[in-house]
Amino acid sequence: MKIIKSKSYESFFVFAKKSEYVLPDLPYSYSALEPIIDAETMRIHHEKHHAAYLENLLNEIEGTHLINKNPYDLASDLNLVSESKLEKVKNNLGGFINHNMFFRMMRKPQKNNKPTDVINDLIVDSFGSFKNFKNEFVETAKNHFGVGWVWLCLRGKKLKICTTKNQDNPLMGKQFADADGMPILGVDVWEHAYYLQYQNKRADYVKAWFDLINWDEVERIYETRKIESKLEKRNDLLLGGKGDRAKEQDFDADELAKGIKTEMEHTDDEDMAKEIAMDHLTEDPKYYTKLLKAGL
Ligand code: MN3
Image (tube, rainbow, N blue to C red; front, side):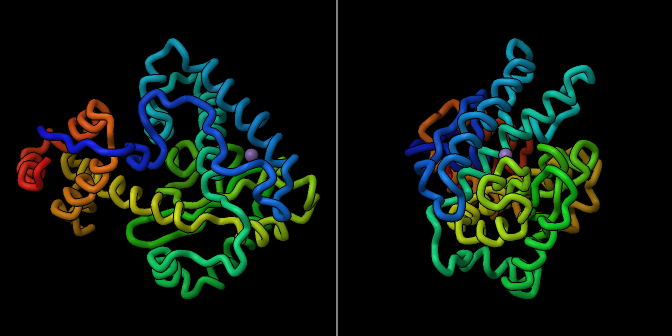
C-alpha cells in the first residue's frame, strides 16, 4: 500500500497518536484568555490539574499493555482495563483527554464570536438557531449538579448537548460515562476552571466562555469525528452486531476513502499512517479495492 507523505498526522483522530501521553503546551499564553479567564486560573489548571491527571494516569498504565493504545482509543474501550484499575484509569484518562480538548478549543477572546459556516449550519439544523443552542448549553451547564463537563456531541448527523460527571467523556459510552456520542466541543464546569473570577456564577462563566471558543478547531474536530463515525459504522457492518442499523445510516465507502486520503495527506509518519490504514481499512476487501482505486 502506498502511503502519502506530508506534514503532520496530528489531525488524524484529533490529537491522538500512539503513546502520546505527554502534557501538551497550550497554544497560547496563560494570559491570552483574559479578561474572560485569568492567567492564574489558566496556569494552575494546566500546570497543576492537567499535569496531575496525566501523572496519575501514567502511574496506572505505565508498564502495562494499556499504554500502547492511544488515549482516545483507550477511552473508547475501557473494557480493556482491569476492574482494580478501572476507577483510577477512567478518572485520570478522562482528566487528561478532556483538558487536551478543552485547552485547544479556546483562543483569544473574539468579539461577536460565531461558528464557522459548516458548524453553524449543523447547529441550526439541530437546535433551530445559534441562540437556542447557546441558551440550552448555558442552561445545561448551570443545572449540572456538582463537578463535570458539558459537551456538544455528534450523534448520527445531528448535534446534541450532554453532560458527564467528574472527568467522564462521552467517548467512554453509556456503560462508563452515562453519555455517548462524538464530542466536538466541551466546557469544564469544575470550580477550579472559573472560581477565582466567577465564584458561584457558573452561568456567567459559560456565557463569557462562548467568546473564547475556537470554532475553526471545532470544525476540524467535527471533520475528524465524521470519519471516525463512519469507521465505526463500517466496523458495525463488518462485525455484524449492529449491522442492520448501520446499513440504514447511509454508509458511503467512497466518501470515507476520500476522507482517509485527505487525512493521510497530512501525515509525515509513514508507520503511523500504515498502522491506521491496516487497523481500519484493509481487512475489508471492498474497502481495499476502493482505497487502491483512490491511490492509497
Ligand atoms: Mn479542569
